[in-house]
Length: 140
Image (cartoon, rainbow, N blue to C red; front, top):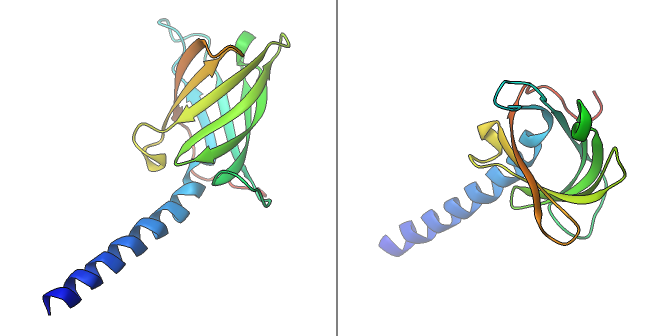
C-alpha cells in the first residue's frame, strides 16, 4: 500500500506541476507600469501580449511594447523560457539592445523586473513594473 501511495503522490505532483505551468503562461499578458524615478516621474508603460503561433524554441512568444517618454519608447518580440522572457529591442534612438523580463514572485505575483543589456552584454538599466490589469488577452 505504501508503494501505491508513493506512486500516486508522484503522478499527482507531476500533473499539478505541468497543469500549473500551462495555466501560468497566460497570466503574464497585460499592462504593466514602472515605478519611475525617485520623484515618481519618467514612468514607462509595458504591454505584453501572447502571440498564438507555432515556435520551435521556448515556451511561448510575446509581443512587447513600451511607451512613455524618452527611453520608454521601444518594441520587441520575446520568447519565454521558465517564466523569464528574453527579446531584442530597438529604442527610439535606433540603439539595439536586448531585454530580459523576469517575474520575481512568479507570473501570478503581478510584478516584473526588466533588465536591458547592451549588445556587448553590459547591463544598461534595471526597471521594476507592477501589473495594472488582469483582463488584457489576445484578441481583445
